[in-house]
Length: 435
Image (cartoon, rainbow, N blue to C red; front, side, top):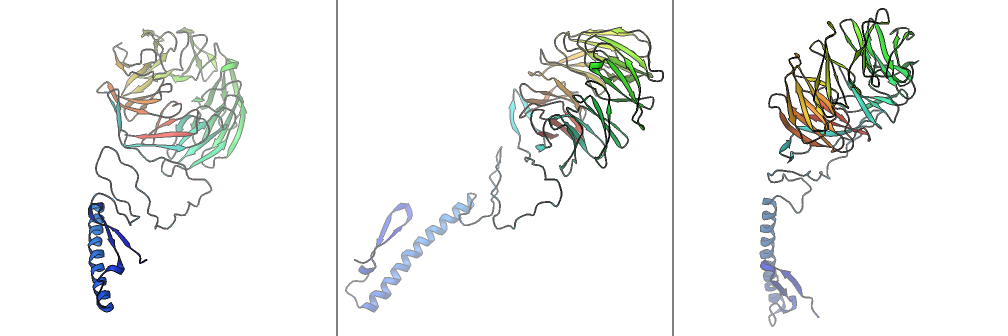
C-alpha cells in the first residue's frame, strides 16, 4: 500500500495526499512531473500559512525558534525574561569571599491599607546568622551577628561581607578612630577590633552583660548591667581605670553638659557621673518604672518609658525635669527633622513632640505596632516585628507614605550610605531599602 501524506491546513482542515494516485493513468514521467508540481503547490501553500502564523506569534511577543528574550507588553508588573542560552558562562568573582545572594528590586506592590509600597530599591543580602545592631563608618555598614558571635563588614557597593569573631551575643559597638569596641553580653567582655584589617586586638573583662560603650574625658565608658557598674577603660592601654557603683540595671549613658547621665532600668532613676572624678555628681532623679536608654535632642535629655507611657525631659544644665504622659507603651525615642519621635505600640500611633520643649505634639495613626524606630533621609521609619512591616512617616505630611511587607523578624532599621538597612534578627539576611 502506498504511503499517504497527511497535512493540516488552515482552519485545522485535514488534507490527504496519496502520492500513488497523483496523475493515475498517465505516463510515468508525466505523472511524476505533475505529481511533484501539485505536491509543491500544496506544501508551498502550507508553508505560507506557517509563515503567517510565525509572523503573528512574533508580533504578539514571542518567537518559536529563538532563545532571545522578548520585552513584555507594558503593565503593572513584569516577570524576568529567560536568559540567552547562547551566551558564554560568566566566571565567578575572584575573591576569597562568596558573593552575596541579592534578590532584584521588585516592582511597586499593591497598596496596603491605603499606604503605597514604593521603594525604588528593595533587595535582600546574606550577612550571617542573627544580624542585630547596625553601625557604620565612612566606607561600610556593619552588623553584629548574635548567633554567630561575630561582626560583619558589608561594602555597600559590592555587598560582599567580611566577618570576624568577637564573642557571644555582641551588641551595638562604639567606633573610635581605627578601632571598634564590641561589647559581648554573654561573655561579659569588650572586644577591640581593627576595622581596617578586621583583626582582633584584645578582649577586656568588663563585667556581666555589658552595654554599648560611649566616649567621655578621653576614656571609653561601658555599663555592666548585671553588676550595676559603670566601667572606665583607657583607650590605648585597654586597662580598666575605674568601676563606679550604680543603681538599678544601668543602661547606656548619654554625655551632656560635661556629665554622663545613666538611667537605671529597674530603679527608674537617673544618675549623673562626673567622667573626670569618676564620682556621682548631683541628686538622683526619679523618673519612670521601665525606661529606655536616654537620647540627647535640642540640648535636653529625653527618656521614654515602655510601661507607663511617659516621656521625661531633663535639662542637664538646670536639672529641671518635666514629664509628658501619653499612656500606652512607648518605644525608644529618635530625632527626626529636629523633633522627637516615639511610637506607641499599644495604640499604633506615632507621636511627634516639639523638641524645643513647648509641649506640643501630634499623633499619627499607623494601624501597626511599630517598636523599632529610626531616622532615614529626613523621615521617620519603624518596624513592626509582629505584623512583618516596615513603615515610613513623612514629617511634613504627618502620615504614612510607604508600607513594606518584610519576611522574618525585622529589627531596628539603620540609615547609612543612602540605604535603610533592616536586619532579620531571626534569620541571616538584611533588607536594603532606598527611596
